[in-house]
Amino acid sequence: MHFFGFDLQELIRTAGYIGLFAILFAETGLFIGFFLPGDSLLFVAGLLAYQGLFHPALLVAVIAAGAITGNIAGYAFGYRVGAKLFQRPDSKIFKQQHLRTAESFYEEHGGKTILLARFIPIVRTFAPIVAGVGKMEYKTFLAYNIGGAIGWTILLVMGGYFLGSLVKDVDKYLLPIVLLIIVISFLPGVFHYLKERKK
Image (cartoon, rainbow, N blue to C red; front, side):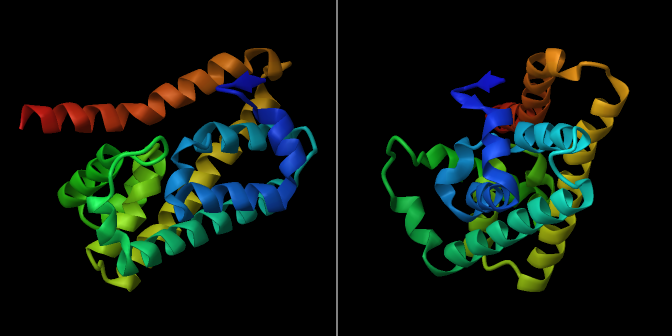
């Protein structure tokens, strides 16, 4: 299934456990990772687990580990040098607006941002950096980080796994399912943006 230039199934098959760990790490550990297909990637990986490509429990563990360590790297980056990003000019990869959106979300929700951001594309990439810039207490950050990563991973991976067990020939419906996941995942960010505009 091709989506935004990615053949998700082929990408996941080729990546394997190590590649999936690296992709999830990059999405939050490297601020350029916001373009990676996080939510849909997890869902399709879960579907492939049902088809026998991965062991579901090991898949959840590997992906959650990548997400957790990626956030830790993002926090460390923000803590040490992230403040300089607020003076960095826009480029093809980096946009100030993405950072400002995460900062606004963080100001509104505090530590819970790290948990909630898991379910919001772009925000989840920049939230740990903003938490590091804001010097969030590390124990608090780590608790929200672990809880959010595990919850997000289980929900999406096992969602794909169970859909595969319930729907015959689910591959035929994969594109509209992934489109729906993407739309739903962007809705909180859209609502937050509209709320900020009203303010």
